[in-house]
Amino acid sequence: MLTRLTIKNYALIRELDIDLTGGFEVITGETGAGKSILLGALSLILGQRAETSLLSEKDKKCVVEGTFRITGYTLEPFFRKNDLDWQEITLIRREISPNGTSRAFINDTPVTLSLIRELGEKLVNIHSQYQTLTLNEANFQMTVVDHYAGIIGQVNAYREQFDQLTHIKTSLQKLNEQENKSRAELEYFQFLFEELEKAQLLTGEQEQVERDLQIGTNAEEIKSCLYHASQSVLHNDTNILDQLRELIAGLSRSVRYYPDLQILINRLTETSIELKDIALEIDRIESQITFDPQRISALNDRIDLINKLEHKHHAGSVEELLALKDDLSEKILSRQSLAEKIEQLKSEAGKLEEELNRSAREISMKRKEILPGFEKEIIRLLQDLGMPDARFTIEQTPVSSLTRDGLDQLTFLFNANRGGDMKEISGVASGGERSRLMLVLKSLIARKNLLPTIIFDEIDMGISGEVAGKMGTILKRMAEFMQVIVITHLPQIASKAESHYLVFKTADIFSTQTFLRRLSAEERLQEIAKMLSDQKVTDSAIMAARELLKNKL
Image 1 (cartoon, rainbow, N blue to C red):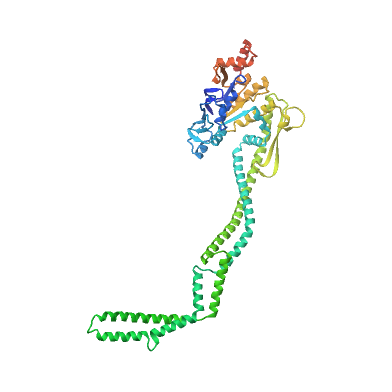
Image 2 (image 1 turned 90 degrees about the horizontal axis):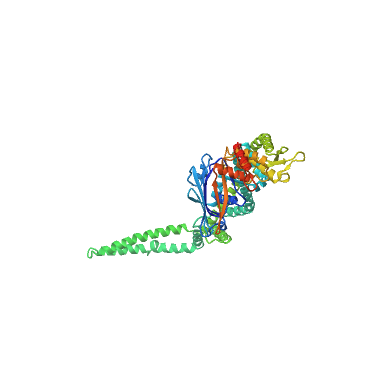
Protein backbone atom coordinates (compact mmCIF):
# COMPACT_ATOMS: atom_id res chain seq x y z
CA MET A 1 0.00 0.00 0.00
CA LEU A 2 0.99 3.63 -0.49
CA THR A 3 2.07 4.97 2.91
CA ARG A 4 3.63 8.30 1.99
CA LEU A 5 3.65 10.70 -0.95
CA THR A 6 6.17 13.50 -1.38
CA ILE A 7 5.87 16.04 -4.21
CA LYS A 8 8.19 18.96 -4.95
CA ASN A 9 7.85 21.56 -7.70
CA TYR A 10 4.98 19.98 -9.65
CA ALA A 11 2.34 22.28 -11.20
CA LEU A 12 0.66 24.21 -8.35
CA ILE A 13 2.37 22.05 -5.70
CA ARG A 14 5.48 23.76 -4.38
CA GLU A 15 6.09 21.15 -1.72
CA LEU A 16 3.84 18.42 -0.28
CA ASP A 17 4.59 15.58 2.13
CA ILE A 18 1.64 13.48 3.29
CA ASP A 19 1.38 10.21 5.24
CA LEU A 20 -1.41 7.78 4.34
CA THR A 21 -2.98 5.35 6.78
CA GLY A 22 -4.39 2.66 4.50
CA GLY A 23 -7.89 1.20 4.53
CA PHE A 24 -10.64 3.45 3.17
CA GLU A 25 -9.37 7.02 2.57
CA VAL A 26 -11.12 9.91 0.86
CA ILE A 27 -9.87 13.11 -0.69
CA THR A 28 -12.26 16.03 -1.04
CA GLY A 29 -11.93 19.63 -2.09
CA GLU A 30 -13.48 22.30 -4.20
CA THR A 31 -13.45 22.00 -7.97
CA GLY A 32 -10.11 23.28 -9.26
CA ALA A 33 -8.34 22.86 -5.93
CA GLY A 34 -5.83 20.43 -7.44
CA LYS A 35 -7.11 16.88 -7.05
CA SER A 36 -6.16 16.10 -10.65
CA ILE A 37 -2.71 17.56 -10.00
CA LEU A 38 -2.23 15.07 -7.18
CA LEU A 39 -3.10 12.18 -9.48
CA GLY A 40 -0.84 13.59 -12.18
CA ALA A 41 2.10 13.68 -9.78
CA LEU A 42 1.33 10.18 -8.53
CA SER A 43 1.20 8.90 -12.11
CA LEU A 44 4.85 9.96 -12.55
CA ILE A 45 6.05 7.33 -10.09
CA LEU A 46 3.76 4.82 -11.78
CA GLY A 47 5.68 5.22 -15.03
CA GLN A 48 3.82 7.91 -16.97
CA ARG A 49 5.79 10.32 -19.15
CA ALA A 50 6.61 13.76 -17.79
CA GLU A 51 6.38 17.23 -19.31
CA THR A 52 8.65 20.08 -18.22
CA SER A 53 5.70 22.47 -18.67
CA LEU A 54 4.37 21.10 -15.35
CA LEU A 55 7.35 22.33 -13.35
CA SER A 56 6.22 24.96 -10.85
CA GLU A 57 9.60 26.73 -10.82
CA LYS A 58 11.18 26.31 -14.24
CA ASP A 59 14.78 26.49 -12.97
CA LYS A 60 14.37 23.70 -10.39
CA LYS A 61 13.83 20.00 -10.79
CA CYS A 62 10.60 18.22 -9.93
CA VAL A 63 10.78 15.31 -7.49
CA VAL A 64 7.95 12.87 -6.74
CA GLU A 65 8.53 10.03 -4.29
CA GLY A 66 6.16 7.33 -3.13
CA THR A 67 6.70 5.03 -0.18
CA PHE A 68 5.03 1.62 -0.45
CA ARG A 69 4.64 -1.24 2.01
CA ILE A 70 4.84 -4.30 -0.25
CA THR A 71 4.97 -7.22 2.18
CA GLY A 72 2.65 -10.08 1.27
CA TYR A 73 2.20 -9.30 -2.42
CA THR A 74 4.72 -11.87 -3.78
CA LEU A 75 6.85 -9.19 -5.43
CA GLU A 76 10.19 -10.73 -4.46
CA PRO A 77 10.56 -12.52 -7.84
CA PHE A 78 10.14 -9.17 -9.64
CA PHE A 79 12.93 -7.62 -7.59
CA ARG A 80 15.15 -10.69 -8.06
CA LYS A 81 14.57 -10.79 -11.81
CA ASN A 82 15.49 -7.12 -12.20
CA ASP A 83 18.46 -7.22 -9.79
CA LEU A 84 16.84 -4.82 -7.30
CA ASP A 85 17.12 -4.75 -3.52
CA TRP A 86 13.84 -6.10 -2.12
CA GLN A 87 12.68 -4.15 0.92
CA GLU A 88 9.38 -4.33 2.80
CA ILE A 89 9.23 -0.53 2.63
CA THR A 90 10.06 0.35 -0.98
CA LEU A 91 10.66 3.83 -2.39
CA ILE A 92 9.90 4.80 -5.98
CA ARG A 93 11.22 8.20 -7.08
CA ARG A 94 11.02 10.28 -10.26
CA GLU A 95 13.11 13.35 -10.96
CA ILE A 96 12.42 15.71 -13.88
CA SER A 97 15.05 18.33 -14.58
CA PRO A 98 14.35 21.74 -16.19
CA ASN A 99 16.05 20.58 -19.42
CA GLY A 100 13.51 17.77 -19.78
CA THR A 101 15.65 14.81 -18.71
CA SER A 102 13.96 12.32 -16.43
CA ARG A 103 15.41 9.82 -13.98
CA ALA A 104 13.67 6.99 -12.13
CA PHE A 105 14.74 5.08 -9.02
CA ILE A 106 13.55 2.05 -7.07
CA ASN A 107 15.12 1.94 -3.60
CA ASP A 108 17.76 4.42 -4.87
CA THR A 109 18.72 2.12 -7.77
CA PRO A 110 18.45 3.88 -11.17
CA VAL A 111 15.90 2.08 -13.38
CA THR A 112 14.17 2.58 -16.72
CA LEU A 113 10.78 4.19 -17.05
CA SER A 114 9.31 0.94 -18.35
CA LEU A 115 10.52 -0.87 -15.20
CA ILE A 116 8.80 1.48 -12.74
CA ARG A 117 5.70 1.29 -14.97
CA GLU A 118 5.81 -2.50 -14.65
CA LEU A 119 6.17 -2.26 -10.88
CA GLY A 120 3.53 0.48 -10.66
CA GLU A 121 0.98 -1.77 -12.37
CA LYS A 122 1.52 -4.27 -9.56
CA LEU A 123 1.04 -1.65 -6.84
CA VAL A 124 -1.64 0.88 -7.81
CA ASN A 125 -4.69 0.97 -10.07
CA ILE A 126 -6.06 4.46 -10.78
CA HIS A 127 -9.66 4.36 -11.93
CA SER A 128 -11.34 7.49 -13.24
CA GLN A 129 -14.90 8.08 -14.39
CA TYR A 130 -13.67 7.98 -17.98
CA GLN A 131 -12.31 4.46 -17.55
CA THR A 132 -15.84 3.11 -17.39
CA LEU A 133 -15.50 2.96 -21.18
CA THR A 134 -13.29 -0.10 -20.65
CA LEU A 135 -16.38 -1.94 -19.43
CA ASN A 136 -17.17 -2.81 -23.03
CA GLU A 137 -13.65 -4.03 -23.86
CA ALA A 138 -13.40 -7.79 -24.29
CA ASN A 139 -10.04 -7.97 -22.51
CA PHE A 140 -11.38 -6.17 -19.44
CA GLN A 141 -14.48 -8.36 -19.26
CA MET A 142 -12.41 -11.53 -19.56
CA THR A 143 -9.99 -10.32 -16.86
CA VAL A 144 -12.84 -9.52 -14.46
CA VAL A 145 -14.34 -13.00 -14.83
CA ASP A 146 -10.97 -14.73 -14.51
CA HIS A 147 -10.13 -12.76 -11.36
CA TYR A 148 -13.46 -13.64 -9.82
CA ALA A 149 -13.03 -17.31 -10.77
CA GLY A 150 -9.58 -17.27 -9.14
CA ILE A 151 -7.95 -18.63 -12.29
CA ILE A 152 -5.87 -15.62 -13.32
CA GLY A 153 -2.66 -17.56 -12.58
CA GLN A 154 -3.81 -20.48 -14.73
CA VAL A 155 -4.88 -18.10 -17.49
CA ASN A 156 -1.53 -16.29 -17.43
CA ALA A 157 0.27 -19.64 -17.65
CA TYR A 158 -1.98 -20.59 -20.58
CA ARG A 159 -1.20 -17.29 -22.30
CA GLU A 160 2.52 -17.82 -21.87
CA GLN A 161 2.16 -21.20 -23.58
CA PHE A 162 -0.06 -19.66 -26.25
CA ASP A 163 2.56 -16.99 -26.96
CA GLN A 164 5.16 -19.75 -27.13
CA LEU A 165 3.00 -21.63 -29.66
CA THR A 166 2.54 -18.44 -31.68
CA HIS A 167 6.30 -17.94 -31.70
CA ILE A 168 6.86 -21.54 -32.83
CA LYS A 169 4.29 -21.17 -35.62
CA THR A 170 5.92 -17.95 -36.77
CA SER A 171 9.30 -19.69 -36.80
CA LEU A 172 7.79 -22.61 -38.70
CA GLN A 173 6.37 -20.30 -41.32
CA LYS A 174 9.74 -18.64 -41.82
CA LEU A 175 11.54 -21.99 -41.95
CA ASN A 176 9.03 -23.36 -44.46
CA GLU A 177 9.53 -20.31 -46.66
CA GLN A 178 13.26 -20.76 -46.30
CA GLU A 179 12.99 -24.45 -47.13
CA ASN A 180 10.89 -23.78 -50.25
CA LYS A 181 13.41 -21.22 -51.37
CA SER A 182 16.39 -23.47 -50.68
CA ARG A 183 14.94 -26.69 -52.17
CA ALA A 184 16.21 -25.83 -55.67
CA GLU A 185 19.51 -24.70 -54.17
CA LEU A 186 19.82 -27.99 -52.32
CA GLU A 187 19.45 -29.99 -55.54
CA TYR A 188 22.04 -27.80 -57.26
CA PHE A 189 24.46 -28.01 -54.31
CA GLN A 190 23.95 -31.77 -54.17
CA PHE A 191 24.79 -32.06 -57.90
CA LEU A 192 27.98 -30.01 -57.53
CA PHE A 193 29.03 -31.91 -54.41
CA GLU A 194 28.52 -35.31 -56.03
CA GLU A 195 30.52 -34.18 -59.07
CA LEU A 196 33.45 -33.18 -56.86
CA GLU A 197 33.05 -36.24 -54.67
CA LYS A 198 33.12 -38.50 -57.74
CA ALA A 199 36.36 -36.82 -58.88
CA GLN A 200 38.13 -38.20 -55.76
CA LEU A 201 40.50 -35.23 -55.65
CA LEU A 202 43.57 -35.34 -53.41
CA THR A 203 45.68 -32.58 -51.94
CA GLY A 204 48.79 -31.98 -54.13
CA GLU A 205 47.41 -34.27 -56.81
CA GLN A 206 47.59 -31.79 -59.69
CA GLU A 207 51.34 -31.24 -59.32
CA GLN A 208 51.94 -34.98 -59.03
CA VAL A 209 49.87 -35.81 -62.16
CA GLU A 210 51.59 -33.11 -64.18
CA ARG A 211 54.97 -34.47 -63.07
CA ASP A 212 54.01 -38.07 -63.92
CA LEU A 213 52.66 -36.96 -67.29
CA GLN A 214 55.87 -35.10 -68.09
CA ILE A 215 57.90 -38.21 -67.25
CA GLY A 216 55.58 -40.53 -69.17
CA THR A 217 55.55 -38.47 -72.38
CA ASN A 218 59.36 -38.13 -72.33
CA ALA A 219 60.07 -41.68 -71.13
CA GLU A 220 62.18 -42.76 -74.13
CA GLU A 221 64.43 -39.70 -73.97
CA ILE A 222 64.86 -40.02 -70.19
CA LYS A 223 65.51 -43.75 -70.47
CA SER A 224 68.16 -43.20 -73.21
CA CYS A 225 69.86 -40.53 -71.15
CA LEU A 226 69.96 -42.75 -68.07
CA TYR A 227 71.28 -45.71 -70.13
CA HIS A 228 74.23 -43.73 -71.52
CA ALA A 229 75.00 -42.36 -68.08
CA SER A 230 75.01 -45.87 -66.58
CA GLN A 231 77.27 -47.15 -69.36
CA SER A 232 79.74 -44.31 -68.87
CA VAL A 233 79.97 -44.79 -65.15
CA LEU A 234 79.81 -48.55 -64.81
CA HIS A 235 79.41 -50.68 -67.93
CA ASN A 236 81.68 -49.47 -70.78
CA ASP A 237 85.09 -51.00 -71.33
CA THR A 238 86.50 -47.61 -70.43
CA ASN A 239 83.98 -46.75 -67.69
CA ILE A 240 84.69 -44.14 -65.09
CA LEU A 241 84.79 -46.56 -62.16
CA ASP A 242 87.52 -48.72 -63.80
CA GLN A 243 89.57 -45.61 -64.48
CA LEU A 244 89.19 -44.53 -60.87
CA ARG A 245 90.35 -47.93 -59.64
CA GLU A 246 93.46 -47.72 -61.85
CA LEU A 247 94.13 -44.21 -60.56
CA ILE A 248 93.84 -45.37 -56.96
CA ALA A 249 96.13 -48.33 -57.62
CA GLY A 250 98.78 -46.04 -59.23
CA LEU A 251 98.76 -43.63 -56.34
CA SER A 252 98.89 -46.47 -53.84
CA ARG A 253 102.26 -47.57 -55.27
CA SER A 254 103.82 -44.23 -54.45
CA VAL A 255 102.26 -43.67 -51.05
CA ARG A 256 105.14 -45.31 -49.25
CA TYR A 257 107.39 -42.64 -50.67
CA TYR A 258 104.95 -39.79 -50.13
CA PRO A 259 102.56 -40.58 -47.29
CA ASP A 260 100.39 -37.46 -47.86
CA LEU A 261 99.06 -39.16 -50.99
CA GLN A 262 96.94 -41.34 -48.71
CA ILE A 263 94.54 -38.46 -48.25
CA LEU A 264 93.91 -38.29 -51.96
CA ILE A 265 93.59 -42.05 -52.17
CA ASN A 266 90.90 -41.98 -49.46
CA ARG A 267 88.98 -39.23 -51.22
CA LEU A 268 89.14 -41.07 -54.53
CA THR A 269 87.97 -44.26 -52.82
CA GLU A 270 84.96 -42.41 -51.37
CA THR A 271 84.24 -40.94 -54.79
CA SER A 272 84.42 -44.39 -56.34
CA ILE A 273 81.92 -45.75 -53.79
CA GLU A 274 79.53 -42.80 -54.36
CA LEU A 275 79.79 -43.17 -58.15
CA LYS A 276 79.00 -46.84 -57.93
CA ASP A 277 75.92 -46.07 -55.80
CA ILE A 278 74.87 -43.43 -58.31
CA ALA A 279 75.26 -45.88 -61.15
CA LEU A 280 73.11 -48.45 -59.38
CA GLU A 281 70.43 -45.80 -58.69
CA ILE A 282 70.51 -44.80 -62.37
CA ASP A 283 69.96 -48.42 -63.32
CA ARG A 284 67.06 -48.70 -60.89
CA ILE A 285 65.36 -45.56 -62.20
CA GLU A 286 65.99 -46.56 -65.79
CA SER A 287 64.41 -49.95 -65.21
CA GLN A 288 61.25 -48.33 -63.74
CA ILE A 289 60.66 -45.88 -66.54
CA THR A 290 58.55 -47.27 -69.32
CA PHE A 291 56.63 -45.72 -72.14
CA ASP A 292 52.93 -46.55 -71.41
CA PRO A 293 50.46 -44.92 -73.82
CA GLN A 294 47.46 -46.04 -71.74
CA ARG A 295 48.84 -44.45 -68.56
CA ILE A 296 49.70 -41.28 -70.46
CA SER A 297 46.12 -41.16 -71.76
CA ALA A 298 44.75 -41.67 -68.22
CA LEU A 299 46.97 -38.90 -66.86
CA ASN A 300 45.84 -36.54 -69.63
CA ASP A 301 42.22 -37.34 -68.81
CA ARG A 302 42.89 -36.62 -65.14
CA ILE A 303 44.49 -33.27 -65.92
CA ASP A 304 41.61 -32.40 -68.24
CA LEU A 305 39.08 -33.23 -65.48
CA ILE A 306 40.95 -31.11 -62.92
CA ASN A 307 41.26 -28.20 -65.37
CA LYS A 308 37.57 -28.48 -66.26
CA LEU A 309 36.51 -28.42 -62.59
CA GLU A 310 38.83 -25.51 -61.84
CA HIS A 311 37.46 -23.53 -64.77
CA LYS A 312 33.86 -24.37 -63.84
CA HIS A 313 34.24 -23.28 -60.24
CA HIS A 314 36.70 -20.46 -60.88
CA ALA A 315 39.26 -22.26 -58.73
CA GLY A 316 43.04 -21.97 -59.02
CA SER A 317 44.00 -25.31 -57.52
CA VAL A 318 42.77 -28.70 -56.35
CA GLU A 319 42.98 -27.36 -52.79
CA GLU A 320 40.42 -24.68 -53.66
CA LEU A 321 38.16 -27.35 -55.17
CA LEU A 322 38.43 -29.42 -51.98
CA ALA A 323 37.56 -26.34 -49.90
CA LEU A 324 34.55 -25.77 -52.16
CA LYS A 325 33.46 -29.37 -51.66
CA ASP A 326 33.61 -28.93 -47.87
CA ASP A 327 31.56 -25.73 -48.18
CA LEU A 328 28.95 -27.50 -50.30
CA SER A 329 28.81 -30.30 -47.75
CA GLU A 330 28.09 -27.77 -45.00
CA LYS A 331 25.36 -26.12 -47.08
CA ILE A 332 23.74 -29.48 -47.79
CA LEU A 333 23.88 -30.45 -44.11
CA SER A 334 22.49 -27.05 -43.16
CA ARG A 335 19.50 -27.51 -45.45
CA GLN A 336 19.01 -31.07 -44.27
CA SER A 337 19.13 -29.86 -40.65
CA LEU A 338 16.58 -27.21 -41.65
CA ALA A 339 14.16 -29.99 -42.55
CA GLU A 340 14.94 -31.71 -39.25
CA LYS A 341 14.35 -28.43 -37.40
CA ILE A 342 10.99 -28.05 -39.14
CA GLU A 343 9.96 -31.54 -38.09
CA GLN A 344 11.14 -30.88 -34.54
CA LEU A 345 9.14 -27.63 -34.34
CA LYS A 346 6.07 -29.34 -35.81
CA SER A 347 6.33 -31.96 -33.09
CA GLU A 348 6.73 -29.29 -30.38
CA ALA A 349 3.79 -27.31 -31.76
CA GLY A 350 1.61 -30.43 -31.83
CA LYS A 351 2.37 -31.31 -28.20
CA LEU A 352 1.95 -27.71 -27.08
CA GLU A 353 -1.37 -27.42 -28.91
CA GLU A 354 -2.63 -30.54 -27.15
CA GLU A 355 -1.67 -29.06 -23.77
CA LEU A 356 -3.28 -25.72 -24.67
CA ASN A 357 -6.53 -27.37 -25.76
CA ARG A 358 -6.68 -29.31 -22.50
CA SER A 359 -5.90 -26.20 -20.44
CA ALA A 360 -8.36 -24.05 -22.44
CA ARG A 361 -11.16 -26.57 -21.84
CA GLU A 362 -10.44 -26.50 -18.09
CA ILE A 363 -10.46 -22.68 -18.08
CA SER A 364 -13.74 -22.57 -20.02
CA MET A 365 -15.32 -25.00 -17.57
CA LYS A 366 -14.20 -22.95 -14.55
CA ARG A 367 -15.54 -19.78 -16.13
CA LYS A 368 -18.85 -21.45 -16.82
CA GLU A 369 -19.12 -22.73 -13.25
CA ILE A 370 -18.85 -19.28 -11.64
CA LEU A 371 -20.93 -17.25 -14.11
CA PRO A 372 -24.40 -17.84 -12.54
CA GLY A 373 -23.25 -16.85 -9.06
CA PHE A 374 -21.22 -13.93 -10.40
CA GLU A 375 -24.23 -12.59 -12.31
CA LYS A 376 -26.47 -12.88 -9.23
CA GLU A 377 -24.00 -10.99 -7.03
CA ILE A 378 -23.67 -8.21 -9.58
CA ILE A 379 -27.44 -7.85 -9.88
CA ARG A 380 -27.85 -7.81 -6.09
CA LEU A 381 -25.22 -5.09 -5.68
CA LEU A 382 -26.68 -3.04 -8.54
CA GLN A 383 -30.06 -3.19 -6.82
CA ASP A 384 -28.40 -1.98 -3.62
CA LEU A 385 -27.02 0.95 -5.63
CA GLY A 386 -30.45 2.13 -6.73
CA MET A 387 -31.00 0.04 -9.85
CA PRO A 388 -33.88 -2.28 -8.82
CA ASP A 389 -34.71 -3.37 -12.37
CA ALA A 390 -31.11 -3.91 -13.52
CA ARG A 391 -30.43 -7.08 -15.46
CA PHE A 392 -26.99 -8.41 -16.18
CA THR A 393 -25.72 -11.56 -17.82
CA ILE A 394 -22.47 -12.83 -19.29
CA GLU A 395 -22.68 -14.58 -22.63
CA GLN A 396 -20.06 -17.31 -23.04
CA THR A 397 -19.54 -18.19 -26.71
CA PRO A 398 -17.26 -21.02 -27.87
CA VAL A 399 -14.74 -20.26 -30.62
CA SER A 400 -13.53 -22.69 -33.26
CA SER A 401 -9.80 -22.40 -32.60
CA LEU A 402 -7.46 -21.47 -29.78
CA THR A 403 -7.10 -17.78 -28.96
CA ARG A 404 -5.05 -16.00 -26.32
CA ASP A 405 -8.14 -16.15 -24.06
CA GLY A 406 -8.78 -19.84 -24.62
CA LEU A 407 -11.64 -21.51 -26.45
CA ASP A 408 -14.39 -19.03 -25.70
CA GLN A 409 -15.21 -15.34 -25.60
CA LEU A 410 -17.24 -13.48 -23.01
CA THR A 411 -19.67 -10.61 -23.57
CA PHE A 412 -21.28 -8.52 -20.82
CA LEU A 413 -24.96 -7.84 -21.57
CA PHE A 414 -26.87 -5.26 -19.55
CA ASN A 415 -30.14 -3.43 -19.24
CA ALA A 416 -30.83 -1.02 -16.43
CA ASN A 417 -34.57 -1.01 -17.00
CA ARG A 418 -37.44 -3.47 -16.92
CA GLY A 419 -38.30 -4.91 -20.33
CA GLY A 420 -36.41 -4.55 -23.57
CA ASP A 421 -33.52 -6.54 -24.90
CA MET A 422 -30.24 -6.89 -23.09
CA LYS A 423 -27.39 -5.38 -25.08
CA GLU A 424 -23.70 -4.65 -24.77
CA ILE A 425 -23.01 -2.08 -22.07
CA SER A 426 -21.92 0.78 -24.32
CA GLY A 427 -25.30 0.84 -26.04
CA VAL A 428 -27.64 0.76 -23.03
CA ALA A 429 -25.86 2.19 -19.97
CA SER A 430 -25.56 5.86 -18.99
CA GLY A 431 -22.43 7.32 -17.42
CA GLY A 432 -23.79 6.94 -13.89
CA GLU A 433 -24.93 3.39 -14.57
CA ARG A 434 -21.51 2.48 -15.95
CA SER A 435 -19.85 3.99 -12.87
CA ARG A 436 -21.98 1.87 -10.55
CA LEU A 437 -21.44 -1.26 -12.62
CA MET A 438 -17.67 -0.70 -12.66
CA LEU A 439 -17.63 -0.23 -8.89
CA VAL A 440 -19.62 -3.43 -8.41
CA LEU A 441 -17.24 -5.40 -10.62
CA LYS A 442 -14.14 -4.07 -8.89
CA SER A 443 -15.59 -4.68 -5.46
CA LEU A 444 -16.27 -8.33 -6.33
CA ILE A 445 -12.76 -9.00 -7.55
CA ALA A 446 -11.01 -6.88 -4.89
CA ARG A 447 -10.70 -9.76 -2.42
CA LYS A 448 -9.34 -12.03 -5.13
CA ASN A 449 -6.88 -9.47 -6.51
CA LEU A 450 -3.44 -9.05 -4.97
CA LEU A 451 -3.21 -5.38 -5.98
CA PRO A 452 -2.33 -3.33 -2.85
CA THR A 453 -3.99 0.00 -3.77
CA ILE A 454 -6.90 1.22 -5.89
CA ILE A 455 -7.74 4.89 -6.45
CA PHE A 456 -11.21 5.97 -7.61
CA ASP A 457 -11.29 9.41 -9.19
CA GLU A 458 -14.83 10.82 -9.01
CA ILE A 459 -16.48 7.50 -9.80
CA ASP A 460 -19.56 8.89 -8.04
CA MET A 461 -20.52 11.23 -10.88
CA GLY A 462 -24.28 11.19 -11.51
CA ILE A 463 -25.03 9.35 -8.25
CA SER A 464 -27.83 10.40 -5.87
CA GLY A 465 -27.35 10.82 -2.14
CA GLU A 466 -29.13 7.58 -1.19
CA VAL A 467 -27.14 5.55 -3.72
CA ALA A 468 -23.95 7.34 -2.68
CA GLY A 469 -24.31 5.97 0.85
CA LYS A 470 -24.60 2.45 -0.48
CA MET A 471 -21.66 3.06 -2.77
CA GLY A 472 -19.66 4.21 0.24
CA THR A 473 -20.54 0.96 2.03
CA ILE A 474 -19.25 -1.07 -0.92
CA LEU A 475 -16.03 0.96 -1.00
CA LYS A 476 -15.58 0.43 2.73
CA ARG A 477 -15.96 -3.34 2.28
CA MET A 478 -13.40 -3.25 -0.48
CA ALA A 479 -10.99 -1.55 1.91
CA GLU A 480 -11.01 -4.67 4.09
CA PHE A 481 -8.85 -6.31 1.42
CA MET A 482 -6.86 -3.42 0.01
CA GLN A 483 -6.11 0.28 0.31
CA VAL A 484 -8.97 2.24 -1.27
CA ILE A 485 -8.47 5.95 -1.98
CA VAL A 486 -11.51 7.82 -3.31
CA ILE A 487 -11.66 11.34 -4.69
CA THR A 488 -15.27 12.38 -4.15
CA HIS A 489 -17.71 15.28 -4.01
CA LEU A 490 -20.33 13.35 -2.07
CA PRO A 491 -20.53 13.63 1.74
CA GLN A 492 -22.29 10.24 1.96
CA ILE A 493 -19.12 8.57 0.62
CA ALA A 494 -16.65 10.84 2.44
CA SER A 495 -18.29 10.16 5.79
CA LYS A 496 -17.68 6.40 5.56
CA ALA A 497 -13.89 6.68 5.17
CA GLU A 498 -11.40 5.94 7.92
CA SER A 499 -9.22 8.90 6.91
CA HIS A 500 -10.23 12.16 5.26
CA TYR A 501 -7.83 14.45 3.35
CA LEU A 502 -8.58 17.92 2.04
CA VAL A 503 -7.13 19.43 -1.13
CA PHE A 504 -7.13 23.22 -1.08
CA LYS A 505 -5.51 26.19 -2.79
CA THR A 506 -4.02 29.39 -1.43
CA ALA A 507 -3.18 32.41 -3.52
CA ASP A 508 -1.35 35.69 -3.09
CA ILE A 509 -0.25 38.39 -5.53
CA PHE A 510 2.75 36.27 -6.57
CA SER A 511 1.52 32.69 -6.88
CA THR A 512 -1.14 30.03 -6.28
CA GLN A 513 -0.31 26.81 -4.46
CA THR A 514 -2.11 23.51 -3.86
CA PHE A 515 -1.90 21.72 -0.49
CA LEU A 516 -3.15 18.43 0.95
CA ARG A 517 -3.64 17.68 4.63
CA ARG A 518 -5.37 15.12 6.80
CA LEU A 519 -8.38 16.46 8.66
CA SER A 520 -8.95 16.14 12.36
CA ALA A 521 -12.30 14.89 13.62
CA GLU A 522 -13.65 18.44 14.05
CA GLU A 523 -12.26 19.61 10.71
CA ARG A 524 -13.82 16.58 9.05
CA LEU A 525 -17.18 17.40 10.56
CA GLN A 526 -16.93 20.93 9.20
CA GLU A 527 -15.81 19.72 5.73
CA ILE A 528 -18.71 17.25 5.40
CA ALA A 529 -21.14 19.90 6.60
CA LYS A 530 -19.72 22.24 3.97
CA MET A 531 -20.26 19.54 1.32
CA LEU A 532 -23.92 19.33 2.47
CA SER A 533 -24.43 23.09 2.29
CA ASP A 534 -24.95 25.44 -0.62
CA GLN A 535 -22.75 28.27 0.60
CA LYS A 536 -22.85 28.97 4.35
CA VAL A 537 -22.47 26.03 6.74
CA THR A 538 -25.65 25.88 8.80
CA ASP A 539 -26.41 24.22 12.09
CA SER A 540 -28.63 21.73 10.28
CA ALA A 541 -25.74 20.87 7.98
CA ILE A 542 -23.53 20.31 11.03
CA MET A 543 -26.15 18.02 12.53
CA ALA A 544 -26.54 16.12 9.24
CA ALA A 545 -22.78 15.74 8.97
CA ARG A 546 -22.56 14.48 12.54
CA GLU A 547 -25.30 11.98 11.78
CA LEU A 548 -23.49 10.75 8.66
CA LEU A 549 -20.26 10.27 10.60
CA LYS A 550 -22.11 8.55 13.42
CA ASN A 551 -23.75 6.10 11.03
CA LYS A 552 -20.76 5.60 8.76
CA LEU A 553 -20.81 1.85 9.29
